[in-house]
Length: 471
Ligand SMILES: [Ca+2]
Ligand SMILES: [Ca+2]
Image 1 (cartoon, rainbow, N blue to C red):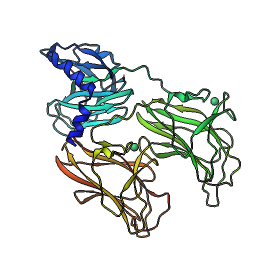
Image 2 (cartoon, helix red, strand yellow):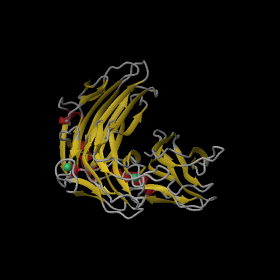
Image 3 (spheres, rainbow, N blue to C red):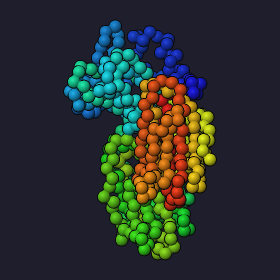
Image 4 (cartoon, helix red, strand yellow):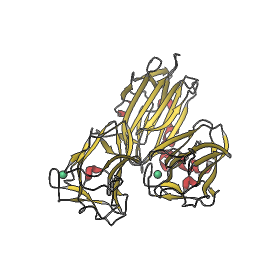
């Protein structure tokens, strides 16, 4: 694992940036120096220049941050004076063609009552309990796109403490203005500039058949019974409401289940299920907090008993912009490729786990146990080095059942060094986030799925975004 980390840090980009920094004494370095290389541009901000790199720094929370001068040419950017229970925050947006984001931060706090939270596009990259004045460095690898940085100092104690940044390296430049909402009318092929991809057996296409306004709307491909037609994209929002107009007619079976529903999913969870709208219907909308979301529309044809397939979407309002690829910390396994993070996993049950394009938390791929019989288990185990500072985090989505005694028919059990830490059964189809705090050292982790009874075929377990706490 150590080797893998070094490879990630020593990119051509960061080497160039570090070489330039080393040529001049720190206190002589320009406040915001733009370095051009094959990855684009990089901006180093040491806060001695009031322009602070030209980024649109703005207050977040109860009180903003301020520049400060420590003397001897050393400048920084510090959280404001807040009371217990308040938040001092700052943030800005930038654009990158890809590269390494670096931030040198510190805080005077010693306890976990006061925390500095560093977020990129709503993803928490670091939650620091207090460095006792020691300067730490966070490095994050970024793909091409627009990013929103937020630094939040959450004051839980009544004591006198603060957090600050000494230097920030942005592998890019200030971002263009972000619009508040993006209405996709389907009148052109641009589809709002979002990167849509097929997520079911087939995709969706623009049609001139029945638009709510204009000429064009969106419809799923013609399907055979049992097939689905899906489209998926990622967007980043500073908060807002997502809504769309849909026109579909399906019928319900004897048990009241929709034969051919249209489902809108956010981060793998069902947000809207529509069956029969009796003409165009504007969904009341789903309110979102700031962050990055995976949005999916999926139409499944379960039966031929419905009338001719007539389903259309128009005027989809997305309160944000196309998301950049997820910022990644070393040690993240997102299952988007088959490397499994470079870790050597071994099968511990009757069968192992497999990558799947069903029900990802982020991106297109997640991990699931093999198809197993009653009495069998599907397990995977690997070893990792914990850094003693960050938690191990994983996301799991479970659709499970209990017997009459309340026993789970097929639990997911997560072991650390053979000790059972989680015994999970059902998350209602949403992804849950599970966190394990570990001391520094080497550990084994095992994901084991055990089937005690027959279950519905669409029940199961999906795991995504395992974050190991590595250096
Ligand atoms: Ca239209
Ligand atoms: Ca994934």
